[in-house]
Picture (cartoon, rainbow, N blue to C red):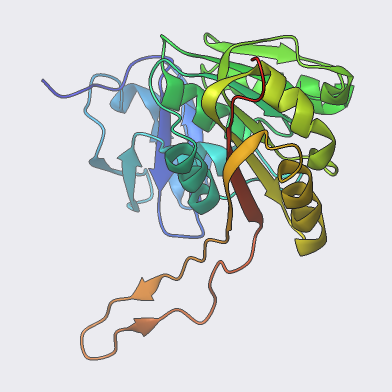
Length: 261
């Protein structure tokens, strides 16, 4: 049985790569653009993946929003972690169903939402954001897309200490992540992961230096992920002129048991 669009569902309305929208379907209401009007009543009860015609005769595609679509819709009041980097964090840090993950900072909530979906209903995400305005904005974003059931939000500086213990991963997107090396080790289970995302190599070097002290961390490595789209056209297939190149360096390490721990 195909999933059907319901009153209250979110849909991704696609015209082309530059003209697309995420909207909440509300019975009796309409979607308006300069390419015409779509009545939400005409979508309710239909499956995702359909084509609909606006009142002015323009054809739109109606899809279920992907995590990338949602991430863009959340806005960029801070630098987001791009999907290419978020996917690498999930895989390299072993974040999946049932995992308990600490994150900081929350920012717009884009990565928080990805973590929420990854850990599922049996897992939990604990996210820290020092700025109240960002905390409030992220909370609204997560609530809008129904991503709060397994997310605990803290409006506090994570450098003051992590409340949770026995977690499976600590994911950091901070100006000074090296200051949390010891605290992250304290709250992580043995042989679990820290993932630190930094835009500059100077920050990355400080992270690696901090993780290399005292024998608390093993398998330290840093990755950079590049993404290039290919324009596939008959007799003129080539890479696009622009690509998503450097966005950040991601450093990973696993906790080691030290002394009598």
